[in-house]
Amino acid sequence: MVKIRLSRAGAKKRPFYHIVVADSRYKRDGRRIERVGFFDPIATGAVTAFSIDKERLQYWLSNGAKPTERVASLIKRHASL
Image (cartoon, rainbow, N blue to C red; front, top):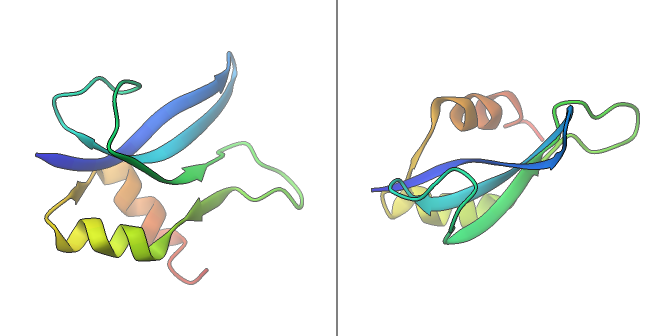
């Protein structure tokens, strides 16, 4: 099954996440099919905290990819952007 999920990057105590499309059997930070965005939970000021390629997201959703709970909540919260 193909999932849209978060893949951790960044340094210790400074999380940064890539929003990726990956097979559910792959490790969290392992192989991915495509990177479609990013999420920075500790972004402040003028720094962009969330970005996603809406066209690619719609493509993967239409092809049966399922977002995880966290990614679905991020998309819902930032849908107005």
